[in-house]
Image 1 (cartoon, rainbow, N blue to C red):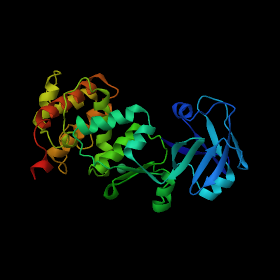
Image 2 (image 1 turned 90 degrees about the vertical axis):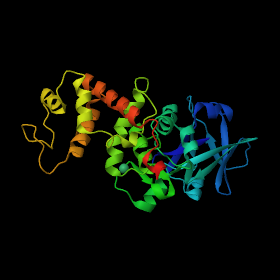
Image 3 (image 1 turned 180 degrees about the vertical axis):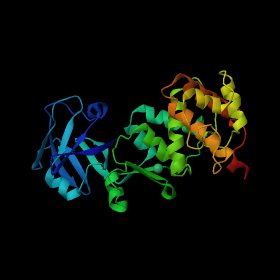
Image 4 (image 1 turned 135 degrees about the vertical axis):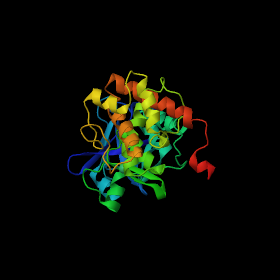
Length: 306
Ligand SMILES: [Zn+2]
C-alpha cells in the first residue's frame, strides 16, 4: 500500500491512511503508537520503547503526524511516496522516490485504472509496460520546474510525475501520451478527445487507433460526416455556428499559408472543444470517433507495418 506525506504546519508532515488500510493495521481512534527510526524507515509500534509518542487522531481516515525528529532524520517531504508494510506489532513506513504505475493506480480512485486500460485496449495507445511514477520533490530537485508546471513526463526513463499526488484525469492522460511518443501539441490536443471517448465509451465502437485521429481523414470525409446533419460541408457548419476559424478569411476561404491537412486538424479540434458541452458537437465527435474505428480499428498501425 502506498500513501503520501502531506505538509501540516512549518516543520511537520502527516500521513493519511485510507480507511481500509487503517482497518488492516488495526488502527483505531484513541490508539497510541510509538515511532522509531529504523534504518531508513519509520517503525510505528505499540510498544513503549520510543520517546516519540504518536496519537492517532479521530476520524474515519486516521492522520498520523510524523514526529519532527524522525522526519528530519529521514528528510521526508510532502509529495513523497511511503510504502506501508504491516508488522506483527504495528507497521513500517518506507520512503520511496519512485513507485510503479501499478502501485500508483492502487493509490488512486478506480477511474484512473479504467482510463489507463481504456487507452491501452480500446484506443490502441502504445504505452510501455514498466511505467514509473516519481515523487514530486525528487523531480523538483532535478528539473526545478516552474510553479505552474503540474506534471512531467520523461519518455526515456518511462517516468511520469505529478505535483499533486492525486492528479486530474486530463493531466494523467496528457503525461501518458508523452510516454506513447506524443509531443507537447499532440498531448495537449488529444487528451481531451481521449477523456471524451472514455466518458462516451458506450456510444462508440472500439478499438480505435486514437493517435491517428488527425491523419485519418480528408476534408471530403469530414464533409460527409456533417452532411448527416443537413449541412453542406464543414464551412457551412462554421457559418451556422458563427465561428470563423483562424485559417479562413471572413468568407471562409482558406488562407494561403494553410493546407487541407490544417483544415482537417482545425475542424477536429473545434468539434472536440465543444463536444463536452454541445449537442451537435457531441454527436459530430462521436461520428468522427466511430468513423475512425472503421478505418483504423482492425488495420495494423504504422509502426507495426515497419
Ligand atoms: Zn506535456
